[in-house]
Structures are given as C-alpha cells and as structure tokens.
Amino acid sequence: MSTKPVFRRAFFWSSLLIGTVLISACASVPAPDEQVSLARNALSRAVSAGATQYAPVQMKTAQDKTMLMDRALGERNFGKAKSLAEQIAADSALAERMARTAKLQKELKDAQTGIQVLKQEMLQAPDSGLKSTTPLSN
Image (cartoon, rainbow, N blue to C red; front, side, top):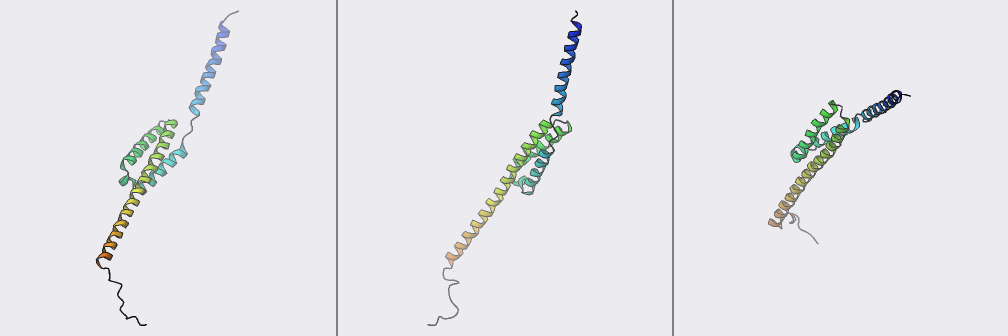
C-alpha cells in the first residue's frame, strides 16, 4: 500500500477547502451602495446648511474621506469603503449640526441686540407714545 494516493487525496481536499474559503471570503463583502448613498446625501445636506463656512475642519475631513472612499470603491475594497462611508455620514452630520447651531447662535445674538436697542429707546423716551392726543372725558 502506497502513501501517494492518500497524500494526493488529502492534498486535493485541503486545496479545495482552502480555495472555497478564499473565494467565499472575497465574495462575502457586497458593494456598500446604501452606505455610500447615505454618506453622499449627508455631505450634501452639510454643504447646504453652510458647514463649509461654519465647520470647515469637519467638512474637510468628510471630503478627504470621500476621496478615500471613492478610491476604495475603485479598488473594490468594499469593507474599507463601507467603513469610510459610515465615517463620512457621521462627520457630515456633525458639520451640519455645527453649522445650524452657529446660525442659530447668530440669530439669537441679533435678537438680543434688538431687544437691547428697544430697551434703550424706551428708557430714553419714557413718556413718548403714552400721551393721548384726545382729552379724556369723565
């Protein structure tokens, strides 16, 4: 009895098993179309909210990651692309919220300034506007 056929059979089945595992590992990561779409939409919303002006660091980070994500998609590295897409969505959401917060703070400051101006005007002319043009009759 020779050991060659047993070795060949074991080698064949081992190779087949390893090949199957490698092929299934490569095919198991689908293209992250949904995450990429969500990331791009989040980035667009942030730009629309004025994040480029009010949160430039976060926007630059999101835009840099977008370039890396596009490169990963081109290389069919879907795991990396998915991870980057999720990071882009988070960075963009942060930038959008920062921009909206900055705008609201500016509106609040403007409103407070307007209130102060009105108070000053009222203090400078306490009787104006209270005088009646017609005499009261009893």
